Length: 232
Image (tube, rainbow, N blue to C red):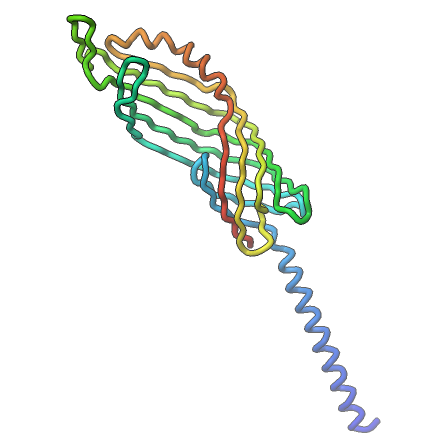
């Protein structure tokens, strides 16, 4: 075999090796892209500010864990009319919820999704303090607002609450970033109610059971979220 033929064979081998390398590199890049099945997300909505981790289980099924928190402290509403009385309202609302959920995308070319799961209601609380803004007159008798007293109502939901929802936006987006929106509700048990009152309003405390009965219909906590996800 001549040197010229030997050189020619070596060049062919180099071309083949280069071709194999390029194909392998291309396949490796595709496999790495396929392996990106995780996403972090931030969300904002009715449960508050949320942090989320999602994992793609299959092309149509995703699992996620979400922590959501919200607090509105010392919200004031003055000169609120209740029947014939004018009162001030001081309210505090706070919540902390951990979601364990599954999202199902029924259509291949659509980001429409169905969501279900459990919400761990570690603290969902609403507190309202009602005070009179002015003295009350009954004929020739004037009762000062201090002597009238105040009413304090405290309502708390807790425990485990199933939830259902629908929305748009893949938990693990196709591209690096993705947006989503979701509408749903938690199905809760009846809340715990505490009702206290002072001075002339003290008998109002006896209305605790009536208030609890009135809140029995409040077994739904709405869930509306807008989210931004990052795939990795």
